[in-house]
Image: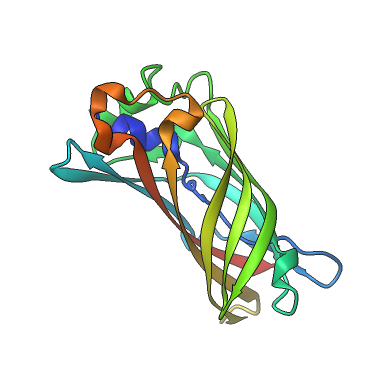
Length: 198
């Protein structure tokens, strides 16, 4: 039951899930998130009754981002998540989380994140803000982002990678967690995004 709140946070990241990278203008390079190659992840962690944690992920998502190392403030990102791809490593729990008790994936099968701004805090780090739509409701969130690295890969492409973290309050998205206890009111999202320059 605890995992119900987890689903609603997606994120991720989505959360973030999150997605997660910056969007740029004329000089920025455009990237496609390498989710097919399993080089991008949207994961979540939520308290289970205050005694342990439920961990999980969203397995199916797509997205793009734009990034210019010389103008990080112009970065942007867009991500679309298949809510039904939620996996908390327990089939019955996943089924319950996806039901109308929580994520209601039959009515809201997709979660999206669209960045609205990026503020560099130096040393390859920054804050990515954007609109997360989950469970039919849209809220502005902030993702703490760190640049992992970028460069040529062995197959002739150029890649850039980032990781990000954010905490979502499930009630902000119309998800009632009152029966799950106060520890389940928020969910931590962890995102890894590796993109291939287009």
